[in-house]
Length: 330
Image (tube, rainbow, N blue to C red; front, side):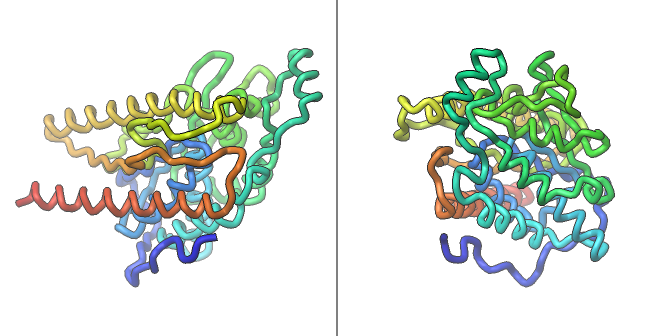
């Protein structure tokens, strides 16, 4: 474990009563276990005074968004207000306490069973991801979420129709979509929504990695997006003869291009809005270099390192943005 991964919380905590429809949105992209980076970056945002009233997530971002909304709903039910710095600390502690080894997320299926199921056209993924499902069920109260003050949407892909779908808290099977959004193709099984085999969904990162488009379409005017992928993939070492590592690498290459496209589109849209006199604030926090984490071999120190990297990236980006905004005003 690392000691004190996040600097001391300042005295002026970010506390909000029930959010108004301000169009302030936190968008969390995909990235598998690199989602720990988001926990640190979210903390930097909350310390800066950022208060979201809309949350959007894809893949691991759907998990983080759901956990954040759940903690915010719990605080609001208990106190009538939300301390966002405490919400951020909750997410950090959740990662450090609960995601400490590969088996906390998924376990490798037996070769015999996997081979048999494949031959019988019942392939159900290389990994059994019931551990992360159990963790979600244990820590998320859907009824509390629905009674809470925030809106929440998670994205998954209908692998039968090929369409992107965003589920909100009004969906009776909302939690199934959270499971589906975090189910990595081939590595993990497709999710049947409501137990209906005619509805099979997988990781929303197949179509969109950073759900900026839907946030903008919903009318958000102040958006902070945390992406887990650097703009460019470098030649970091990995064992390409290991099937799971190879599949994770191929996924990263594809996801990297998708998230670059998502962000570039949103930045161009924001520029056009400003040219037409309409204000759309867009803050993007992402690593400057690729994050390195082995899906099949990591420990709590690796998770702590990711959290610190996210926090540092958030602090640097927010400082740069503040400097740029000050220069414009002058």
